[in-house]
Image (cartoon, rainbow, N blue to C red):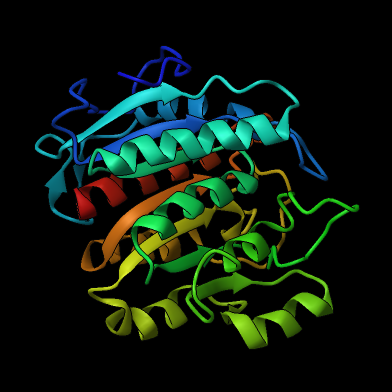
Length: 287
């Protein structure tokens, strides 16, 4: 990719074209897991999501549509300096800025959830009325975590500082400290425990607005998606999340990320397969 010489070679996602200039959606990996607090390994998520995607069909029964005529490319992973959080976030921000300035929709594959922060910074600059949809088991609204402002546990707090008050919608949250839920009462729209029902209830009110979607795979119950860094029992089913994703095409999606897939914690690959299916359905919906 021109002007991003720090992007590595790769085997692209199922059905991805090689023509960046013509692509509407650009898949790019952000293989970073430097601030994780439980199980590391999400830096291997992007590669695994791509590799298992070849076990899927390009055709979707859900959408009665296929990837074949969708305008998307996969430019590989950002080659991040291992352990250097600040420089890695700067590089992710630079990549997001380039993709947005080229008039395309960035689709980032994580990596830990902190990668969302630099992406949203650039998306919010381009779309001042940006709405962020956050699917997750965890609130991620702490101001600091182990004394650090930049952490996978603080990412939505940092995001909330980049968008207008109450422009964040959080679904499926079932873990956090009390202070996070008090913060949410004042600054976000939080729907604890459930994913599908509250999302479908607010869907019509979001139509036409610029929307950024950040989907942490641990929003799904670990019975269906065990391969994640901080599994939290009690989440939605894989069927529920796919039903939610099927509605993304009704929204004006201007950016998206899918994070926290950790292949080493799931030898069955069902987490990566679910993630790949989410990518497929999203591209079909918004492509």
